Length: 66
Image (cartoon, rainbow, N blue to C red; front, side, top):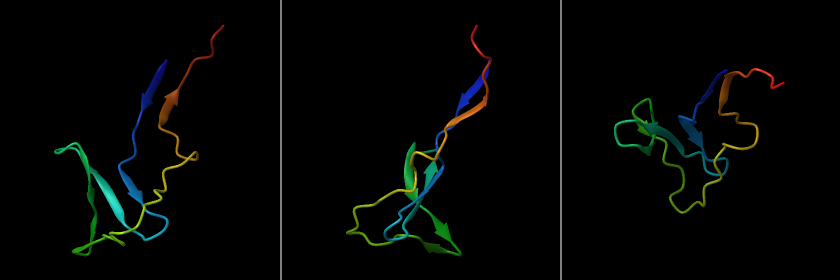
């Protein structure tokens, strides 16, 4: 069996456009920069991240039991 759990590395708010990336060094989400500009969105937004039921953190193949 070769299954790996892969967490998301990027997320965007569906309401205000804020974009975060995962920082391995700090073990935390940080605001993404694109073309030298931080993608901060609205600081008063209650963010609706685009990580939902369609995101599948499982990669690889599993062997059927039986």
